[in-house]
Length: 141
Image (cartoon, rainbow, N blue to C red; front, side):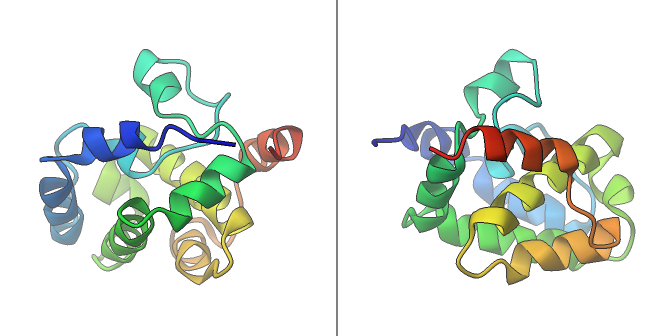
């Protein structure tokens, strides 16, 4: 099945370097969470959350396999876990919840879940987001 991953590439164009810099500084300031750390469909209700939701486990695997998006996700995952402080301090409360959902999604489908598990371990005591796992089970394809 074809997935519209270009929506993420287009959204990240011109924004990705600043998002990465904000994470490395340990202080997210601009609005990019939806398309840098996407979540499974069904969690977010805003138009942006819906536009950049990952529809299924298959789409999440395709995101990881994408030549641009996969490496970028690993890079921003390493970047967000590097600074001191909690996910709430680095991202803000709402986006810290989104990060947990995103890391749960990609840890569940990745051939190498280590970067995503490391983020879950660091910020959330290794606990997955159960709502993400439930939605993922309901939408494997």
